Length: 116
Image (cartoon, rainbow, N blue to C red; front, side, top):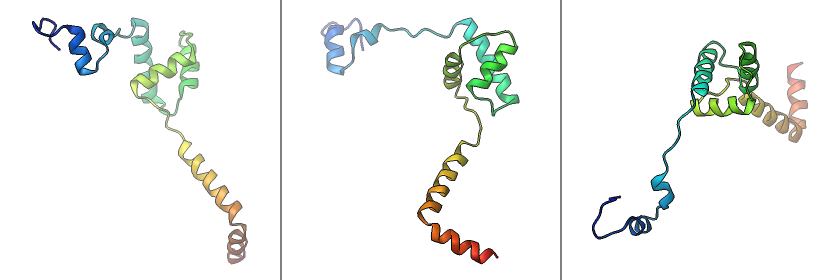
């Protein structure tokens, strides 16, 4: 994109490139100082307790004197790429196992007889 192109206006260049002109002038706003402080605290706590999700992080921040909304903490954790390490994957496996056992109850009976 050349702003001072003699033959093509900015409008025409944006049209040819398929770009919205508003996006040309948009300048993203960075995080506030308060958010940067919260992100630093979240990072420190995450290294100590990686199993904390946004709810527990919000509770922990409240004990540190920072009353903030859980949705804000969730957004900041997402921006930082933090996700609670939990047994979420096990839940899916358990659901699959329960579904399998419901569908194949005769297999479960045979398995039980073999274990006696």
